[in-house]
Length: 198
Ligand SMILES: CC(C)(COP(=O)(O)OP(=O)(O)OC[C@H]1O[C@@H](n2cnc3c(N)ncnc32)[C@H](O)[C@@H]1OP(=O)(O)O)[C@@H](O)C(=O)NCCC(=O)NCCS
Image (tube, rainbow, N blue to C red):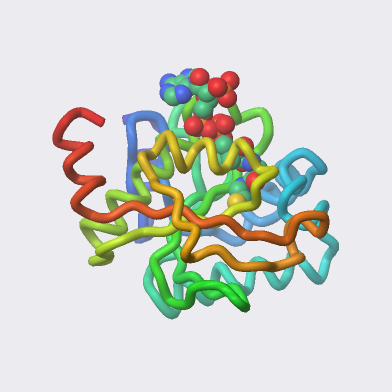
């Protein structure tokens, strides 16, 4: 195990390791680094644009509430090799106005220089394992907009299926096309793909 990961292990925090990454709880000093590296036009392109102070405060409060209410959230994604904070990935319960409520939902957001390396898929696969193995989900959904090819591409790479029956409208993400598109994967499908070597 790398020094970065073993040092963090000394703390009594949630952490779940993959080959290259750790999903872990947030620490106070993660937040400035998270916003410094991810609150950019490219990362926020399909998320309502670069976030102002009020939006950032509300986003942090939501993630802290998910942890408090459900025992899971969009955790920090840390690279074990050097301890770099790459972004977040994890689990919430779907709660967007007009959309499905209370379903297990996987989500992700990585800094731009961490794209194209398979980190998001690795982190998301870990989150799906946790959803089914530790948090008792029967099904996990993911939501995005049509323009966010990176995000729905990842959903497909994970083996998720398109779920038009769960689509809804929200202008918070892409005002030009407010349709939120849904994907999902069932426990049995995920575990079968895992057993087959995914
Ligand atoms: C959505 C997002 C997380 C996807 O990240 P990503 O890096 O493209 O996704 P993956 O981890 O699956 O990586 C796939 C890419 O890594 C490459 N790759 C390199 N090494 C790899 C490896 N060891 N394993 C797998 N893929 C690897 C793949 O070839 C692929 O490259 P390509 O995009 O050129 O085809 C990222 O674009 C993002 O953070 N976007 C901004 C935030 C956002 O919109 N979040 C979603 C809101 S709904």
